[in-house]
Length: 387
Image (cartoon, rainbow, N blue to C red):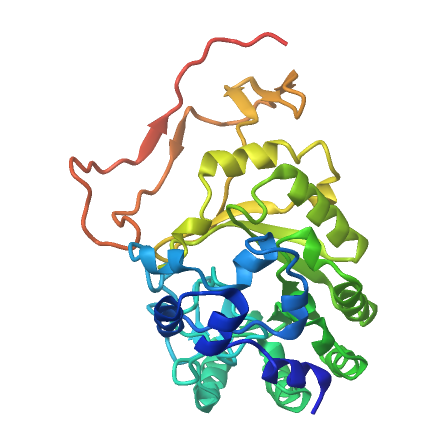
C-alpha cells in the first residue's frame, strides 16, 4: 500500500471522530453525516492552525450546512446533460468524464455532493458506455477526467482509461481535474508522472483556495507534474471567510505562479444546497478583482466566472472598465481610475446589434411576465467624456 492510500484509510470520517476531534454535537454530527459525509486526511488536517480558520472551514462539517436547504441538488444541471452514465456533455467540443466517486478530501462546498462518496452514483461499471459515447461523438476533442477525483484511481486503473482514450483519434486533449496536489500531494509520485508523460498532451486542473495550502509537499507535487511536461491550471472558489480578501488572493496567485501553476478560474460559489454560508456577493467579487488587475501580473489573474445555474456554462464577469462607447471611440478607465480614449476604426458597423434572447430562465421553460421578443438593442447616446 502506498503512503497516500494509507492516509486515505487514516482519514477522519465517522460521527464518533467528528464528535471527538471537533467537538460537534452528536445529533448534529449524525445529521451532517447523513447530508454529506466527511473525509479529512491526516495531511490536510495538519494544515489547520486554529478552529474556524480557512482550512477548517473547507473540510470540517458545520451545522450551517443543515440550515441552508434553499440551494439546488444539481445547480449546473449536470445530470440533465448526461447522455450516458458518467458523461456530462455541455459544450460542443468538450465532455466531462466522471471516473470515480471518491476524493482525497471532501470539500464542504462541493457542488457535486449529491454524488461524491457514493459509488452507486458514479460507478466504474458504467465506463464502457462512456467510452462508446466518446467514440461516437467525433466533435469531442477535449475530455476532462473528474469525479470525485481521478487520482483516487490506482496508476494501473488510470492508465487503462488513458490508453482507451488515446485510441480515440479525435480526442486531442486529456485533462485531469484533481485536487490531490493541494489536499494530498503524496499522491503525486515519480511513478505516476512517468506514466502520465506517455499520454501527452495531458493537462491538470487543480484547486488551491488559500495560501496556507501551498506547502513544501504541495510545491514538490506541482514541481513533479510541471517537470513531466504537464501544464497546471488552478481553479479557485471565492468563499466567505476563506479567501474573500484581495490580499489573500494576491498571495495565493503569486505563490501559485512560483510553483508553476497558472491561476485559471476564480469561481463564484455555486448555488448548491448546504453551501449558502460560503457565498459572497457579486459586488464583493468585482471589488476584489478591481484590486488585483494592474497591481499584480496578468499571469497571476484568473478569469472571474459564474458557472450559470441551469447549465448555461461559465460566463466571465469583469469590473466596469468601459465608461462609454460610440462609433468613433471607446472610453476606458485603468486600474488607477485614470481615463483614456481609444479611437475606433471606421467600418460598416451599424448602431443596432443583433442578439438572440432565450425564452428560458435558469433552465426553466416558462416565459417571464410581460415577455417580448427582442431582436435588436439600440445603443443609447452618452455624453462625451473628455480625456
